[in-house]
Length: 586
Figure (cartoon, rainbow, N blue to C red):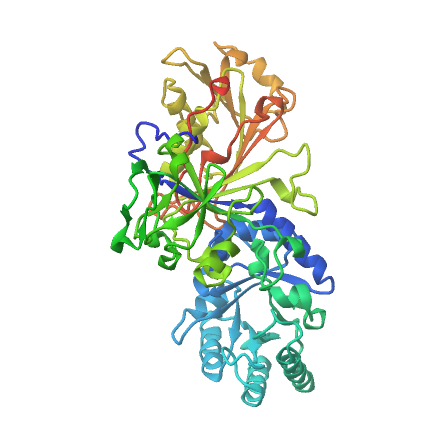
């Protein structure tokens, strides 16, 4: 049985939730590489709309860029602004807005804007004048989808108006684009009819003197199956997350790996007699003496109510079907008589990659009568996201971590309190002789994290930046290891720390080193590396809102082999739950 979740004293339960979404960033990276291989003549725009299809906007965007994507795409402007606030400098395209949108701010942030109609061009031109710089625009032609963009003849008028504005220095016509209606049916005649219309639009743009940087049409399905639709840029979305856009071709067949796993901890396990009705309306009735398990998430978390009595869930290696109606915050499983060996806290896997016969998002989509796009994007934000994966995309073509490369866990921290809480959780893994290396810019939260480690180790405080002392010892108040807090900014080697007149031995202490990257190797081959990043362009004004930060955790060396960092934290604004560390790492 999976162990329960412990919330350290002083957290007041912050960050606790009985379910989690685990996102494999290595899978994202491998999928992006696979898509780039499928379209070798084109650049890749990673579409990270809808909070990265529910996987987490910023972690997914970062992983996609590491894997070679050169563009990012969002539907709504808020996603584009968030990408810029996080410091991403690559071209970002946003295409969903209504009249009155903050175009001047978008232009100032160098966000590319899709222009689907004359009204939009007029407002973008006005905003460009206000911003004092030309807007980068992509003119959308409706080639047959019957949704966004202008049909060919009015689009041609839009093209000439945009090129006239370009001559006046108000816009730059960067691209022409469209969207396919049936790319998941590669042989359908409508696909090639749309490509013909798009080619005609490009001929008209060329004849009018447009100097385009990119022409783009291909979504996930076209990226994988329609080379003639690749042009200069492809825009995969669903396939980045390891899901197949085709009804009759699975992800593995396409060389993709699902990145999302949704799991929850059973809140209640109890015996029930034959003939017992289950959940509202008693749409399910037990047919034998059995055991029921309550899963503490529901349609308030994005679990479809249509999953009632049809969707699969795995518990202890066995698949079960939801029993009765899905409620706002819970649903029930009939675990069968063998469920008597289970207890509250057992892990229920709603869907994952399918490696261990757990259901997949496609299984859920088929059961509910929808598409897997909807299954993953509808998972609510109150379920925390935990991002895991090796650093810098160190994966083989199949998405498996390369042997010898330690895994990195990525944690989103919304404020200083979350950063300090992460430190308290890390303290539960630390023992005498351990070395923790902190990197990050000024104001990223290194000392705040150390303060949390000190609180978790129960050492004497206060813990402050050691900048002017180089090293400070904080004795344990409970007979555990002392904390040695080091500023390595002015040190050439941590050998110099050994020469300091410390009243403790490093072998008997936990040593935390700020600015330690590149100087710790002489002290230990075993270390816990923590890098802290905060959005670029944010200052340290105490009156300004805290922009949050991202922590990346990696254990290096034999000391950290087999130690699971995955449970340390979760994204989406909360620090994650952590089970009690094994005795051999305490």
